[in-house]
Image 1: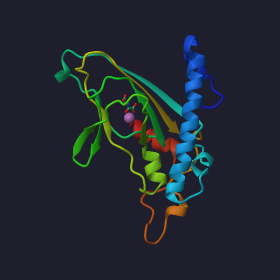
Image 2: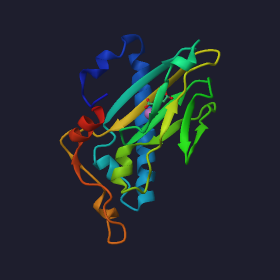
Image 3: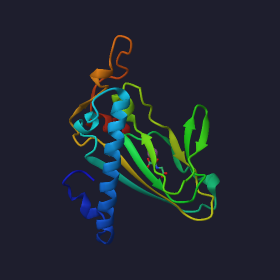
Image 4: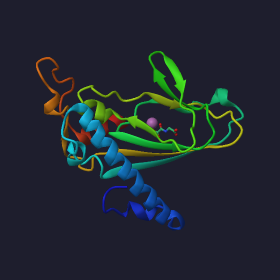
Length: 192
Ligand code: OGA
Ligand code: NI
């Protein structure tokens, strides 16, 4: 959902208005969260907004049908999200979404009304490792019923912009952990 883009036409007309409302609410939530996360880093609260991290959203809607032969299925394999922040809602079919805590996989079971927030790779980089992106996966669905989840990934809107750790977070005690890079180069490497 890039700003001012025809992407909206790809959303079926019958749910476009509802989707626009949802998108607006998610952007509002992400704005608030990003400002709190900036405060947590000790930098000015609108820094992530200023870095164009609120404008471009990737909306991924997942449908995991019940699977009769789960041993043949990988599910959504272990990954971290290649974005700044992810906002995710899931339906009531639990036991499938997991995050890695140390060596263990831990279930993120649905809680009515709860929203799952993932730190993405770009926020890990920009925060110079103050925040860590979360490794997660979705197992093949052996449960009764269908699992549905809707994820919104916040990514920078300017592909040619240079990203790296915020200078405010680099010091002699904590040198930069990452080199600066052009965002499109990051995407190219992720896709390869
Ligand atoms: C994703 C993702 C998990 C889910 O879209 O990146 O991790 O619960 N989705 O579907
Ligand atoms: Ni993910």
